[in-house]
Length: 400
Ligand SMILES: [Zn+2]
Image (cartoon, rainbow, N blue to C red; front, side, top):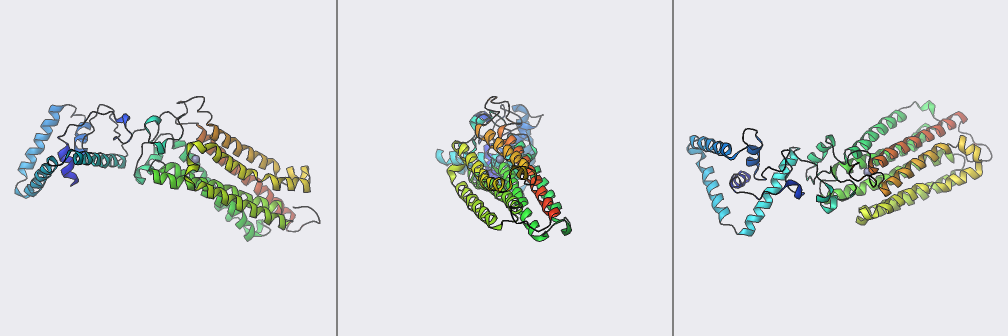
């Protein structure tokens, strides 16, 4: 059936629309001058030796000759094709239009499948793909094929940096996490418990980074897929924040289990609330960019309460040395800077069209998230080492 349709449309002239005028138009590496006809027609047009009509005609004649030579066994197919042509001519204009549209979709999917698509400007993106109008060009078109989306990881477009920053970050934390988990038990005071607690941080980081690179990879698949993965992406940020709190609270309140449990329950409830809000469709819209940044910065800043608790009970000197507050402060600065760049879309707002591929706000935000998570891990591993040198015992006063 598909062959019949393609063969037929090879003879129907198409309107010479520019491929860049419509987002669902086939993307061809040849450019605007190419006819957007059937797959067969395009294949011929793309051949360097077939750039004019006469060459195409001789090609068609040759093909006809070949068909004639094939003899009687080919007849049923010819009949089918003829009846297909008759059927098409007998269709109402509306049906012909519908068939035409279906062919275009079929052809587009086929081209995307083969990786033959071009980046397009922001203003021709469908609404569900429009996110940041300061990124003027270099966007992927909608590509309703997961295979094409994953192949696009190796192409240059607005999402390339977003994908790779968190894909590499994810692999980095995966290796670091495995190394940590396989450290000899004699390096810990309570090996199983400590590995589970630090494992929560690695789990949060790996979930956050993997949901993120997956979202940026399949974001252009379709509206439904983009919605599902954006919810996972936002939930991942909440997982990272929740996972980061666990080992920090565990070591910082080693000798005060009651406040430790209370703070853990609070971050659990707040984190689940952030995940709940992330499931609302409006949350992913461009208008709510500031709200999103605010929700996650707020979730992270809920750590101010246990920090103050620690500083008041241990003193500022102990908090900044043993308590690793300097590293925590650096981590918070990195995350908050990233969130501000993300919300305000800096630097591309000052250079529209100049940061389309590299160094736009989302990429910088991604890099700062990976850096912030690593700084947090460094602080936590210092806390763990302190606990190891001190042993499991506690003094009369203090949290540590
Ligand atoms: Zn992202």
